[in-house]
Amino acid sequence: MLAVACAGGDSGSPTGPASATTVSAPVPTPTSVPTPTPVPTPTPVPTPAPVPTPTPVPTPTAANIVVIVTGQIVVGTTAQATATATLTDGRTQPVTMGWRSDAPSVATVSDAGVVTGISNGLANIYVEALGAQGLRQVRVLPNFAGRWAGRYITSSCTATGDFANKLEYCTAGPARQGVIGLVRPMSMTITQSGASISGTFLLGSVPFTSFNGSIDDRGSVVFSGISTEDRVIDLDVTWKISSPQVGRITGAFTTVLRSRTTYSGEAREGNDIVDLTR
Image (cartoon, rainbow, N blue to C red; front, side, top):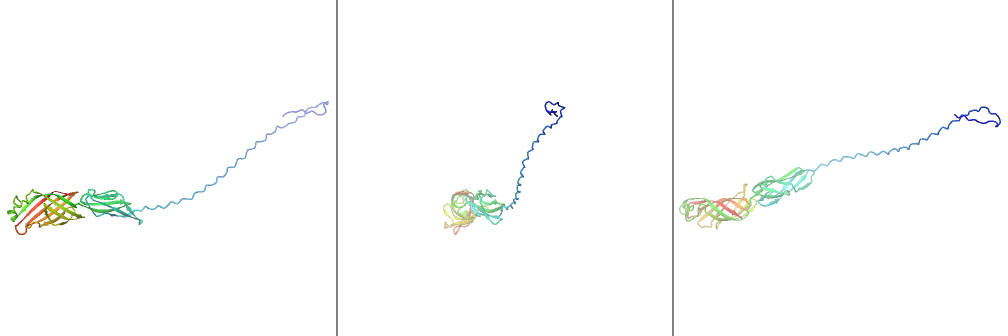
């Protein structure tokens, strides 16, 4: 507190003791606190509707596959295999790739289905696709068709009656035809349709009747021919031939000679093909 002296009355009058007045110090005005800015309420994000899981569509598979290819081909030739798959939903579609052979030494097949005959025998040509397999068996046949020329050699000879005694057919007699080791020329012309063959042949210059034969499972064919060119002696020839390589025939034949009237008995030769090529 501060004591302040105050003058009273006139200035000439004696003054008594001064009374003291208390003055309060000003109270400071409190600083106002700013009102905080209201925080905006966030807009709620809508929950997305769940996306339904699509029902899986089953992949169609093949109920069966049908293979089409010729049942017989000749060594050295080709054939095209085709296949059609029928799906479980009823639709069909071609199968063009993925071909195989279970016997490539007999027939090969490319991935695109080209079948090639290699050697005599049977091969299964098949294709797999869409969970199924299609198969077709193919028979490969030797190729006998063409004009052939070569030689044969006599490997055995027997004779009876006049063929032995008068003609001395199997020795160095007048006929000199059945001498073992004798090599003579031959030729043959063959046509072929599948497993069937036909044709004609000559032994030396002697013609024989036309022949027919069928190729067996081993690739061999047996056929016969007769020559009545000679006025006295008939020749009956029975062949068994094979073609293990393209352009080459191997085999053997038997020749039986009989006289119509002049000579008794008969002569029988065994002959082997030395070479016979196209």
